[in-house]
Amino acid sequence: MLHPQQPSPEHHSATDVVRSPAREILYPSVDLSVITERLKEHNEGAGLGPTLGRLIVEMIHELVEQSPNSTVAPRHLMAEAVREEDSQRDAARHQLEGEMVPILAAVGLKVGPIQGTWQFSGVGRNFDSRELSLHIEDATRFSEYLAALDPSSISPSQKRGLSALYLTLCQQLTRDYDLSTSDDRLLSLVSAAASMVEHYQRLDLPTKRLETYLQAIRGRYLKTYVEAEKLQLDKPLEQGDGYRLLWHRDTTPERLQSEWNKVLTVLGALGANENARPMYETARKTARHAIDTSITEVSRWNATAGATYMAQKQPFLNILATVKSRMSEF
View 1 (cartoon, rainbow, N blue to C red):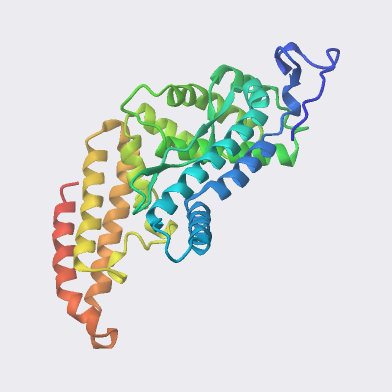
View 2 (cartoon, rainbow, N blue to C red; view 1 turned 60 degrees about the vertical axis):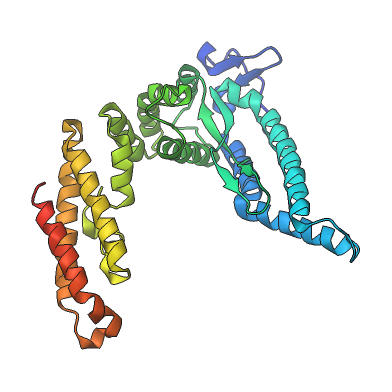
């Protein structure tokens, strides 16, 4: 548990101290790694896998305890286990939030749920995720907190916490926020992003991904950028793992066609937005390189590659040739 230090007024400026009704919290003393590690621990136990495992164990225990003549169906037992798991995870979440709120409020952050719903077959209801993440609630206060951190005295632990927060916020931009609506959390993050980049650089922390997302938001192509990133069109082919763009190595004709259709769709969307021109040029060069590489590799398949590859050779070449022809439009 993080214990805020009492400030020494003679050694710290007014901007270094956050006043709350109960106590004063010194900005440089706040170590977010304590919070991010607690959240990670909580989420590891609240994820789909561990939760489903506990539900199954609970149902098995109930079945074992039931008499052979019991009329209670496994579906009812699973539904009851879900309700109990819901209750326990709600209690754990509220306890965790209660522990963190004073510190987080002081630096302009808050704990919020990760959006997600699971469907358990046979239970007849959805199961909302109880995983938690950090969100920026007060962009001004968060920027003041970052400004108060001194590069010469910041601890490795504090850097870990800030890095974890950075990754979380980047993930939220691509997963949790809807750019088509006025999401207050997104607006707060965007308003704080420029300041975050400045102060993270000052503290020798990475910022490139956030800078890229911020540019895409301003240019109104973040959603398309994320799709391009998933396809690894955001970097030259030799800098990625190459697998996503070289689907012919392990796929079916149907999937090969589907994946390259995604590439063509992304190229079309990027090309239609003048603000995305640098990203478009990178994606176009990467896609052209990948389609040429794919055609060359498939053309070289021979009997030693095996019957499956040979059976797919011509269908693959037909698909790739059509894609290359369509790519000439870009």
